[in-house]
Each structure stands twice: as structure tokens, then as C-alpha cells.
Image (tube, rainbow, N blue to C red; front, side, top):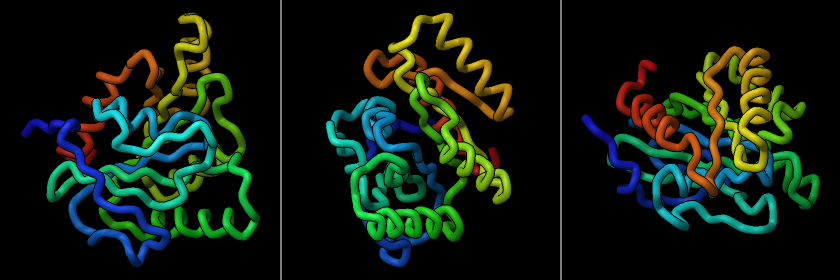
Length: 196
């Protein structure tokens, strides 16, 4: 069965796992540090301008945002981490929200971890990858803003990241659409077959 990501609709945003949509069907979540272009990349992958809110101010995603593709399949935009200028209490609240989601959400089948190709594998990224490995949660790495590098620089970074992490790593650019078709197909395959 084919999957048209352009049919995606914004469902809801929630500060607590208990308030989220029913935990059924399957969903893929997008995570990453603030300012890596996460919302822009979701919009580009779905070919829907503005479906995920973007902002010039890092750290604007402060809820668990759910997007419905159909009755059984969803995408989830998680709050960014590591940059936003907010209080320690608010940051701790975000962390608990994300941990609760990643730990307890049964319908979560894969995490798409977005990093800026110029600054990959920060400590917070590595911690998240270690946690996912311990939880046996599959992860794809998306090295965004690849248009900011020369082709050879981007490939060199991709090889280094893939060698360290031993997981699917893709060069992408929300701005130029580089690499998006491959990731879009990967995303559809995951959502169509929850055993991937």
C-alpha cells in the first residue's frame, strides 16, 4: 500500500504523554538539537509548507506535536534540545516529556535523529543514540543543511558519522531538497512495515 505524505494533517500538541492521542497504530518521531532545522525538514519531506511550525528563534517546539497521515500512521515532532534560552525548570520539563514519550509510547517504531552536518554528534546526540540502542529503538540519522558544505566535505562527514554510529545515515537539505526522496521512501517503508 502506497503512502502519500502530502496528505498529512496536524493533529495536536501536548505537554504531557497522558494527554497525547491514543497509543495505537504506528508513528515515527523526529528529534534533534534546537536549530538543526527539524520542523523545516518535516515540512520538506511532506511537501507541505508550514505543516510543522518553523521559527527563526531556536527552541520554539515546546510540545509533543502529532501529525496524522491516516488513522493508523503518524509523525511526531519532539521538542529540540541543547540550545533554547529557557529556564532550567522548563528545560527539565521538556526532558521529562520526551523521556516519557520515548520510554512509554508503544506505537513508536523509529526515531529520525536530525543533526546539522556542520556540527554532528554532539554529546546530547550521542546520549540519545546510546539510550535508543539500550531500548532497541531503531534510529536513522539525517545530516541536514548538507548544502552548506561542498559535496566532498559532506560525504566525508557522512562516512565518519556512519562509521562511528553504524546506522543508516543520510545527507539532506530542507532548503535544496537534497536527499529527501530517499528519506521519504525510507519513512514510507517504515510506516508501511512496522517490522523494519
